[in-house]
Amino acid sequence: MEWAFRRGMGALAEKMGMEFLEFSLERCVATLPVEGNTQPVGLMHGGAYVVLGESLGSMAANLHAGPGRLAVGVDINATHTRSATSGVVTGVCTPVHLGRSLTVHEITVSDEQGRRLSTIRITNIIRDAPV
Image (cartoon, rainbow, N blue to C red; front, side, top):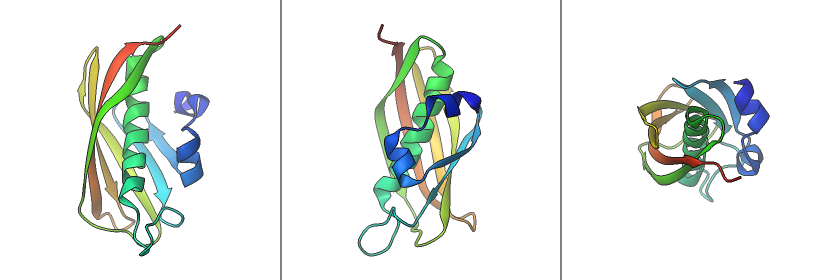
């Protein structure tokens, strides 16, 4: 978790109010408030779910990549199955595949009642970090 705090979440995640709760190779968890991240009709914006998923998945892939290496997203998809209108949503990121040059993570986003709102899958490619 210390690594994630040192590195930071990035300006977009911070602007959206994302907070990391747990951070390890096996599981990363973060929350995001609904307020301030809605579409005009008051529902949580689907793009906000994707930002939560990409933030968790990319940070997890970079932790796996290790020092001197950089993970960069090459594919992401999301299926939204329910909408949130208030409160906080929670994203839980778990690895599907952790390879030397490629990672795949699944992120489930749930509301405060534990109902799944979105399922996101991200693939990251791992390269040597630029010098």
